[in-house]
Length: 215
Image 1: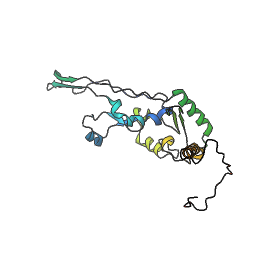
Image 2: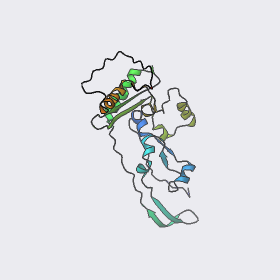
Image 3: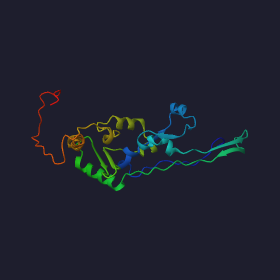
Image 4: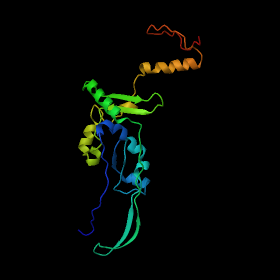
């Protein structure tokens, strides 16, 4: 048909989507409000909504190509006026260990076995602090947003009691438990309140008659 043309385009495909959805996030069609903020974006573009897709949108996007042509009254191309070649976006390499991520995801899933609304796990390399795995359950398939997710299905997921979009590993609030002990010990050593050989008898509780008494 006159006035129409077929063009190839690239699209996301998230491998092992459920395992990495909270880390990678997903993209969605750009809104008119966002186009006003980014006039160099096209109305047909997709932009990051959550995760790394959102955080590194400007790094991953690259630059679309442009071609300006002159057409006749029938819509046929007469001549090409100008053309700008597209520039691909940059790659991002993570410290995430894919096998470890999937192993923790599967193990944690079997452990809760539907008995809990959710769970979270994080694995760090103690030598350098690198993030090796970050798991939040339940998860979701971020490919759904690429293929086209109906507003009804999206509402069902958003209103679900299990909250699959909620990243429990970085946004959840939990009691620190025994993980606080090394921090307290390090602070006490720094202030010379204890030495590496100090022994403390722990009876499971502590009584503080007056929190304002310096002694």
